[in-house]
Length: 170
Image 1 (cartoon, rainbow, N blue to C red):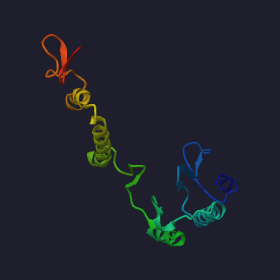
Image 2 (tube, one colour):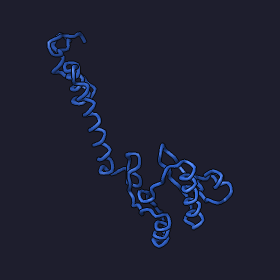
Image 3 (cartoon, rainbow, N blue to C red):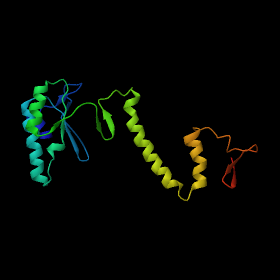
Image 4 (cartoon, rainbow, N blue to C red):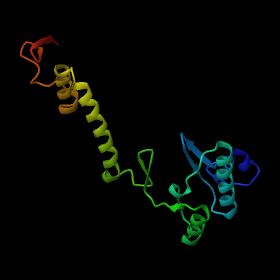
């Protein structure tokens, strides 16, 4: 991909300083092509992905891929999607579990993220409760119920903390 940009086959997006060009981002098995809306870039993307298929022996599933356009005519986006045999994506979309293109100041943007975190914490809590019920009861009230301040229900008048049947000094 770097070679295609260096040789001028693929035109990335210039950001800030004229010398900084972003053409692609890769994360594990995801690749994001970022470039100008032109036919040359479409041909280059298709060729690079086809070369990847031939070299690696893996198949790129174009039907699961999505094409996004910002400030483009719908006609060009439709043409590009049919040329690459992929779907047209809409904003906001989810990438790596986070919404992209949504307003980060809106509470509704973060509700799905918070639900995922709650579900993961719930499964973690269930695993930790097995065999550690008394210990978990103390910290469940402290961290999830009352925040980080001491829970007056757990601290006796002599400054000792009651945990199940045991008494521990604070």
